[in-house]
Image (cartoon, rainbow, N blue to C red; front, side, top):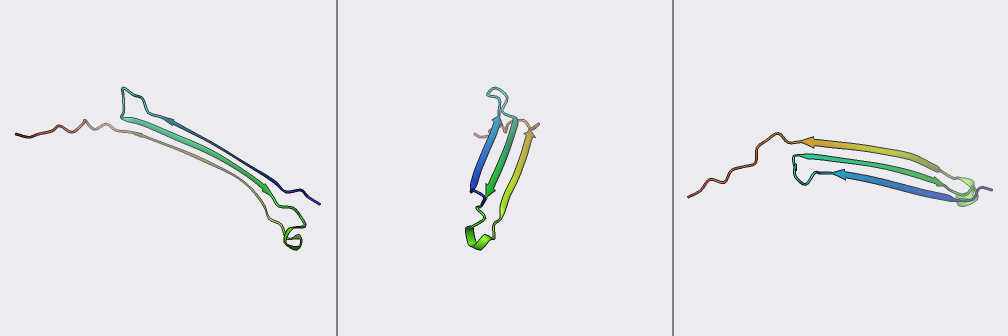
Length: 70
């Protein structure tokens, strides 16, 4: 008989300098481990194990908009 086990770990990071707001960096890592007991649902069990990693960045080279008016 297998005991049920579950674990989930998430880690996220963000970086955006205060003095230079044209740079944006984001990253995330997620891990899931889920083992169902063998006696659940008549012995039909599904084990789920997985990792997800995502990274994204942007750099804006545009100048800030200038307000034009009267």
